[in-house]
Image 1 (cartoon, rainbow, N blue to C red):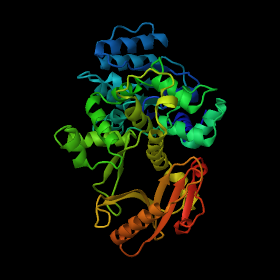
Image 2: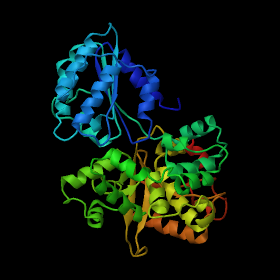
Image 3: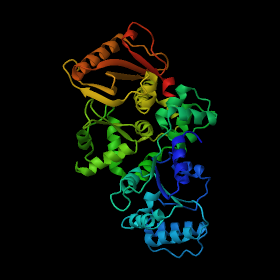
Length: 470
């Protein structure tokens, strides 16, 4: 299995515990949650059932009953409520031989239909039966990350503090994608891998769709613009799998896609008209952030406010090139999208790629062990009337702030005189805002390093694409 070492270790530790354990495994659609659990336990469970997307309580209960019968509970009667369902599960498990019993309930959020009483029955199963034993490992899994977090991990009722292990499955890093691509013999160099990552993110299932023998561009043609649906329909499916009412979430994401620099909460509210601006809107933003679709960049030195940016690479690519396009031309990406448009996309997508590899940037800078905070900064000044924005500031406890400029290039990146002047103005403006007590180091994060021309000496540190593969 590629990566997931800490997650595997956590699952095995829960299995080897001397007591019953409640584990949640959650993360976005297609990230590999079910695969992880199946692989760790060899596809062998005392009981395994997966919720049915979009089905009501009656069908969910029928599905649960069939799962019980598949595992050997032939006498399971028709189920009229979740209380009955979990009681039958208890009866079935009690009749099994002595030993650890792994109960894997996949896509649990889909079982919690309106007024079904699912959560109350789950609480009764765990608090009234399983937790008083020593042989139950209950694994609750789901793509609806916000449901798992709100209803289980942060439950304020009977399940409060009952979950012992919480595993949020994150997207693969560049290094893990490289390992996966090499295992599948794709034959890509690191620039090719970066381009794939900028369109697909670190979602294992998307990478599994890449065909050996095709360039990244040819694979994009097939997945997004070819005669087969590929990933064209994934956008709606992705958000509907995560949120029961996906439309307002998609409106937020689409609004952020239009503003590269990002939007504040109030700007987003005005742009989308979603909700009333109260707790519901805040909850939606929190859910999108928890699921990894947006990131919140706080102003330096502040913990409140800030700018929301679209962070999901797949959504960014889809909204820019696929949504609204009727093209089914199998050569669309390689033949019809201009180099200028592609380069503009690569520039923005590379910034997002860097933002998801902060740990690797810190290691490259030799500050892995230094406490840091990551911020952004934007302002309008007399010398920069249209405003200046710095997307990535690494504020270090050792008195240094790394001001990171991220640039995508097919070769060594050359700082021009005009860019040099813009950078100096930006640094000077930020320095006035920062005040005394901190030194600013200009850090260039590029694909292949900097050309050592006249303006190179003003750069204190460099990070390259190879560093991001650590």
